[in-house]
Length: 375
Image 1 (cartoon, helix red, strand yellow):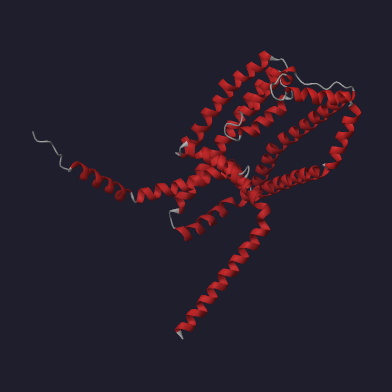
Image 2: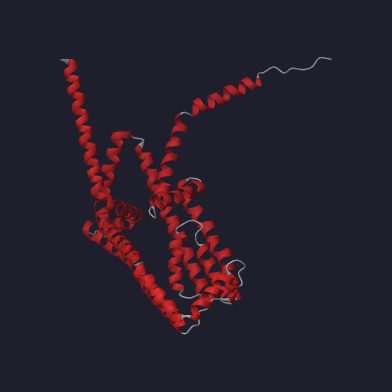
């Protein structure tokens, strides 16, 4: 009887586990598209939750109205620069294409002499320009055929843009519910993890919160400061489309040490156009001002708040970007922060054993008899 009951119990457990796994897989398939938007919404809600608390607790607004104010504000902060950037990019692209087509038609497509004088590709560039200017109509026809044969890539690009906008809309919609129900949701998650891991989960959650806030503020403030300073440099150096370049610099500045590729590229372009003073001035401004801000703000804000070595944060940012995409900029450091918290807790629990072994080794070394040669 006991053996039969044990077999039945095991079979029931296996069936229950199988059903739970199947349910988990199905749920993952359903919500897979919304995971990244939900992560972005969670990050934004967490770092801006004190502002929501101000509207809800200090101003005494209802949870729904406070969440609506915050959601609309975040939408405008994200949407306005995005619309401006897209509009400027569209204008610049149309102007560039129109100018390029006009130059091809009149047979006067050219590049700076510095490019023609390059040791390896300079002669190839000259040959290509000669063939294009010799037969403008043939070049335009070849370009039209190339565009028609690659329309599929345009559809792929459109799908990517549409998917990105859909995820952005989903993130903003989810943001409203994270504001309104965030406190209750965090309490439930904390209790569920406490039931599984124990009371030590509180320390891990606190570490996650501190790291997330510090990384977002550190990366965001650094990128904003660098973009504004770079925008000043673009304006005074006479770079084309300084507003667009400032927006691009802000996006690239979210990646550690990525800003020099933007202002450095603009400096090289200015030098290639014969604007030597402006190009050198922008390069010096980038080296001594823009990069200095990156080296100062990011380590102080992140490492100072989290008590985590900056190299760990740096590895987490780049590793997270590689593993999870753009949202990995914030997930990577959090994951490493949890791992470091677990490591420190384990060391703290076993420090007596570890240091006791070192004391034994030292005592044995000190008590070894010394051998001296007799005369």
